[in-house]
Image 1 (cartoon, each protein chain N blue to C red):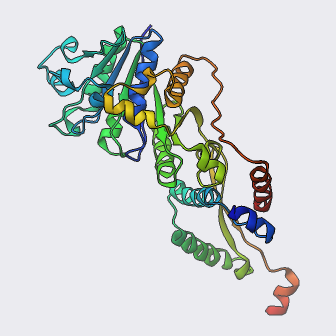
Image 2 (image 1 turned 30 degrees about the horizontal axis):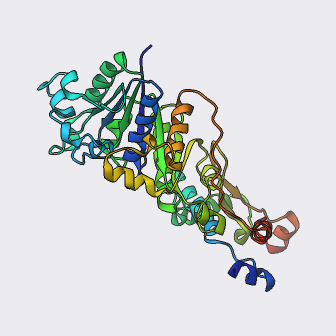
Image 3 (image 1 turned 180 degrees about the horizontal axis):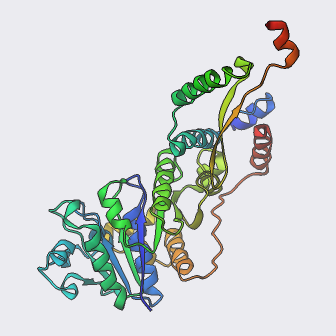
Length: 269
Length: 91
């Protein structure tokens, strides 16, 4: 069966697309799937450092598209997992170096011997985003629980619809349960109500993400990390398993619960 | 704890989370429909002008609003007509 192409995008930059792509890739590969993580952010290559494979790059996707190397030369194998590969972006070229048709051709080739191709999209809604979305069977939208990121996610959801793709699925990244509990951060339920989209993952803010990225070892490899568990859950859901969403409720006093109840009553119109 | 004081004083200040949600809902209505508040006012004026040619309407009572659900955005015009008796009296 041909592999599935999944594009990870967000509209707004800095919400964690690359981290999400690397970690879902790791989690799927740890479940025995054959996975390629493809960096489509030409000119701003980063998936390589997040995965910890930056020292092994010889060829990149532009070399492949322009015929300077074969697929097997461009793919970098992650030695920590049996079937995880990186197809790196070019760092010195611009987004127009890979056309939508080029990316479709590359993905069609990768589908033949891999279960998943995960594309790390460029931020924005311009050419780089459109190219990354073209081959996608499924689009995952990463957002943070903050107004600018949610607004941009809404825009991207509309563009995915307009492209007549299947409805995009949402990952809420960097949720801080204590702030939600204090009433100082949008909760996942708020974001879902606003965006009217299906959820596929909630990833809590977790220092272990930065620490593991510092070391070039994606957090999904860390059994103890909460965020790592969230990424592993997303991988299971992509495989069609029904995994309940984790609840990250911190400690809430009875007084706080009561106050919140009163406040929500006050809002009813 | 400020929430507790507000509660004791009878205040129900919206949390920043509530404010964020409300602001997003409002801004997305305009983003999705690609209609600015200014355009809405223009629409209102022109709708009033067209309908006034044929019917007498209660101009200050005209409301042009958006409603939204999961799948669609909808422009709703609520245009109260002046009733027959008032119309006769005014003409």
